[in-house]
Image (tube, rainbow, N blue to C red; front, side, top):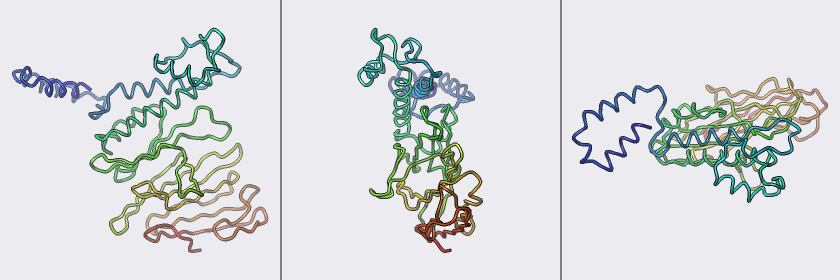
Length: 306
């Protein structure tokens, strides 16, 4: 932050500071040794502090609280005015207290807007983004091997028994040009929307000068079931391949990507949630039947081979 301020001073008042360059360079050297990463130009500490403040207000209250005093929340006047317009029915009669769940929902959206503002910065290269991601409290994140595709996720504040996430994909080239998917749903096509979830791994696949990214994840689908998923995208974040299974805990024995052979191997036993061998036929099978599927990367997508 201090280096950014000095840069702006030199740019704005070059003559005034030219005689003090040795002192300025000494100061720059001193602050560069500071252990706190400096946000890139275009992103300030204020952006990150605002993000933290907004999400700190997006924490669900204890059960049984109908109204909470506005003074308990750390929100700005412009945010309060917007909140009063969007959630006018959530205030008490004296307008000094509000349903806390309305604040949680509103501030979660504001936090995501601030994050979008950060990710939309032209100057934010992959290397620069990788330095500031550890400062984003409450967010998990992954980066591809080439530091171009980033996945950020945060557990939704008002989720039910199934743990759900705000999920973001961001691709950035060496010049900082970016493609960001902020909605929790992206589309393979208009008739087949794909829900973005929290991923555990990103595999980079190179083929004839083109780069693909295979994302893999496992999540809690309900109290007794798990969701397993693969998603293949290109540098435009277009969905090329999608595989998603919801099954009872323990019934999926293999859901893996083999990097050397570029194959996806899936093995599971059918249950009341997963009644068919989806990759082979849609016919309903007896519960406890075995299913095995292998998908091979063709250079463009994954196709079923057995």
